[in-house]
Image 1: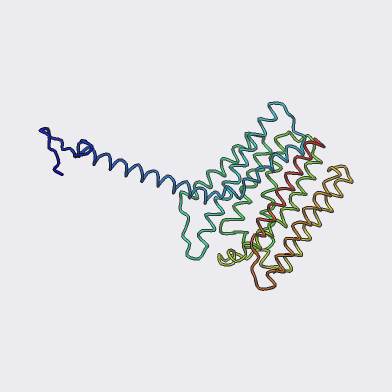
Image 2: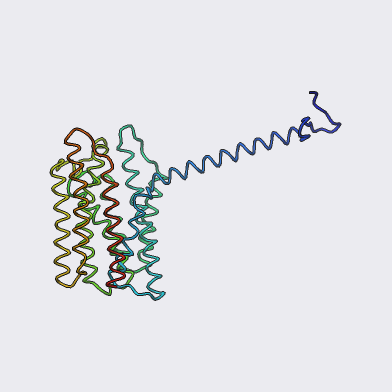
Length: 321
């Protein structure tokens, strides 16, 4: 087919009768748009990998549970403080996980430093958490600052307590428990005994939960040069420590309920979740004793603990608030 050539400067194609120069410019713009969209998607995927949102999103129930235990009111001022405390905990978790991911990447086999921009994002989120904490209340601000410092000691060199047995597990459990206290501060500290009971319970529960996490990630941690508590204890020692943590949780809830610090049904719920998680751990240890790696123990235990946490919060709100 012969291309038509009108008398003007522009050239036209036979099918669309569009100027060739305009067609080329349009194709160039389309390619630029496609590159921009691809770059934006890649940046979004990298941010999601850095912040690890799915790992900590369920933990946003912790400040709400703290507010419930502290008998937070339904007035607008109390609810506004709760919302600010929740925003503080979003930045708290995002910043802490981002800094941990940056430090982990540099230690993985073949890994490279995360770069200034990624570290900058983590530190900016951590600073935002502290600022929002002080906006909620002075005590919440100090708690957020304490948590960010603990998170830095856990993840970053030169200390990097993640690779120090016992110390790493305790720091991690304490970091999660602090968000419960941030939520409790949003309620104004109305019921300090109930808040103390809840904080102690969460600390005792997060210790065995952290051991489950460490056991599930032991090969990855070992390759990165981190010697966690689970590695130090071995299979049987880790199982015994997890059982001991849940037993301590049950005994604490019994003592707290007897002293009037916690509802009577907390020990029952804690015993149920402890038995459920221990059944998973025992099965996993048996599988691995046979030479096969047990998969999914962390996800299964996480489901049990999240269900327990939701039941604890909703039950306390409906029955005892």
